[in-house]
Length: 368
Image (cartoon, rainbow, N blue to C red; front, side, top):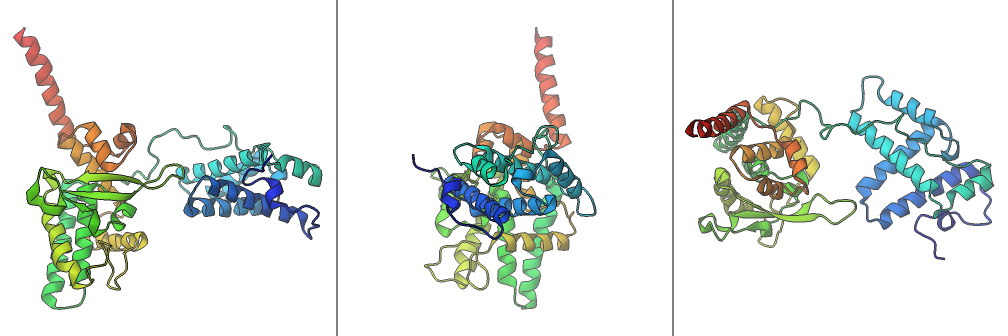
């Protein structure tokens, strides 16, 4: 029978005597699990942090998987919660999940690690992560409490600051007006279409699409997202995000950027919508740093991240009265429950909704 990817026989050479057998077997376990994950098409960005965590845990425990026990997980968790760099519960839960999955891999009979460990060390791996010593996933949203949608006032303040910055640099004649305009339009586009950071940075000129029902918007009636969030090792999901009337102000800004500002730097055969001054596609990390600096200069709270603009988009579409299904498809969620986590409607919206419900119910009773 053919060996499955990640099995012990594929990564441990038979008849080889190792100088440090325990370290060699542990290294082979990591290679085997890495192969198993790659066979599931998981991304390197997912696999590498998991490998690093396992090495870190082995160093902390001072032993190898066939000697690990639940107490090692408990001590490791306490160390993560100590000191000034206390980790978030969601981060620790992801660590527990990685350890649990690695132990499940070792205990799966198809991979042969139990037999190898018993033969070589007289001890076998066991599951060290249980309900009694790991973080339970009790809440749908585990982000920082300070992370929330921007208010309308905060958005207006941010956009006014970005526009004023472009005008100020342009009037001064200093270098940087082009980059300031790019930054301003990227932030506005992120909000106006509810995009994730990676989706925003990976947009191409060809991803700007028309809406046949709004021909006056030209090629800015929708954006075609080709790098949506992948699920369980799948390819990036695609979707088209329509321009909505409440955010039609973004059309003029997109037109100015795509037809006037961007051509000043690139030739016609360049694909990326957002570029650096060196004619390279702007990266997610660069945009994160740019937004953090802009937010600080604008005097807004440090908890308001670029992703909070996406939360704002969802919240404001709900307040504008768009159906739940439309909002879910616009932001690329698989389930409406995920969209609901992003929604944080204002007290004014709640009050208006309640008043409408009261009028509908009690007026109908009086008519009877």
